[in-house]
Length: 193
Image (tube, rainbow, N blue to C red; front, side):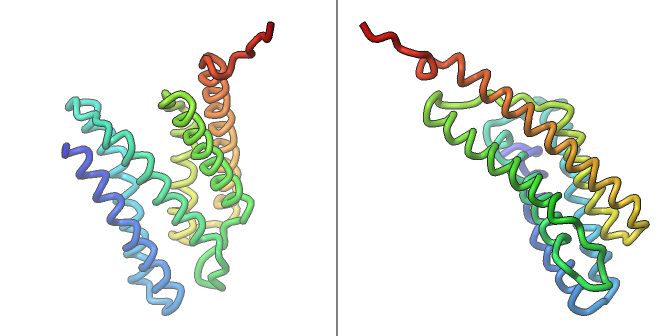
């Protein structure tokens, strides 16, 4: 268990705290709960960069970390976007459902692709791309902006950016998947004699 993995596990443990704090805020209107949700989300988001830094700079890259890090990202962002896409009346601005659909579609297709790749090839070499990192930053910024209750026009622009880069990153992952599948012997056509 590396230090980087411990930071990632902390991120995962902050997710229920974030979700419960948002739900309590929506139910009671008590600003302390909104602040608690915001702090939990921000700490988890900052820890995303911290665990990556620790893993790279202190040579703590592990197979467990390669599994837990993207899982922590998905759990945090999907829970935030889905939770904030629900109608919370006047308390919180509602995120559009098309953003949720874009994020969930990409992640579900990625999981299906990984499953197929695992069955056929054994594993998929996932290369992190800048578009995926930008999508993550836009998604995090969208959730934080909504929790801060700042200008709705900027929230809409952040939402558009999140959807755009999420879609682009999904296309790149699809391209990588097709490229790796096309080089595997099971993908090659057989000639019958």
